[in-house]
Length: 38
Length: 374
Image 1 (cartoon, rainbow over the protein chains, first blue to last red):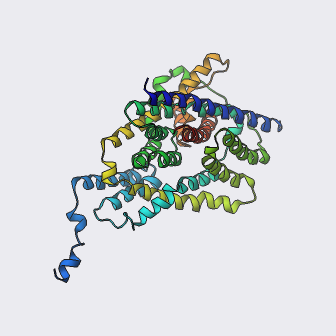
Image 2: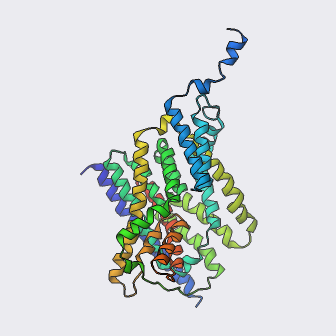
Image 3: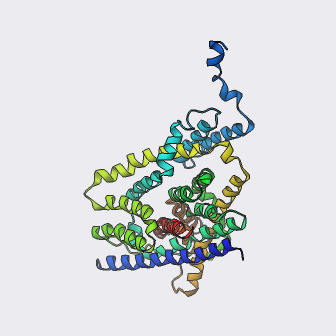
């Protein structure tokens, strides 16, 4: 496989993982912050 | 040569030196201005871009070149990355993350709808673009003009003009691009799924203040390179939510954003010189930008469909399409589709939440590209 394409696929995997990871943290943070109101 | 000969030389130079290439570019500028005025496609950007294109394509233009004011603006605002960051402060001050606090699960649709960026990047690599160029092209799929400009300035400044034009054009064409993709990937039954109005939660000011700080810290821990982008957006949002700096918040929302948008547009337009713009790669980039938007939409919708395989209470998969950053256009389009599929099906709250999540996710996607592409 072409080196650049291999790099791109690696970047895709890491990036999507990181984006979902950040969203999980924000989800938990919002849940915790908003829960205290009810 | 007499007086007349020496001083008349510069006159009519613009006309005499015109070639078909400049003529085409003047027409392109005219079309952008037409789309901005007659069709109201992103007029605040496309109008200055179109006029900038005209200014820069008249041979001998004093607006560009070493002493041209547009070249100086380009160096001061684009190369320095100041314009996109200042615009982010303004956008942050405009955004109310309230709906996201009510529907935090929508955050994940924002993440899923970034897939198109990376798939388009892979496609660009296969078409022969370098990794840095491919990353800049893929980021059109962020559906977020300032992020696209920011990444392209770093990685492929020579492609800035077509990337900017594609990013802003497609953002305004979301009502045309998204519905057929969504319809292709969903059944009428799925499009009629109701999601309920959702509980209206009182979100405290403390939560609203903490949120931009938490986002900045989390994004900064994951990718410090994201701090300029994320930090600018969240700083603007903090100004809005703090409640004690209304004057600054209003300035960021209005004067700052308007002034920078004006300068950004005309400066981007000035990069559309015939020698840089009239290349086969421009058409390729504009085509791939469209593909990026389509794949983003598909990524969000398919993610929702996969989730539905496991969820007892099904999600309307059209919500996934709102995970792109084109706010609030995408949310409006999808809500309208749900309404036309079944009158009374209100999914606006969820759509807006997913759309906001897309704004955050697209910036993180841009930051990841900046961090990982060498």
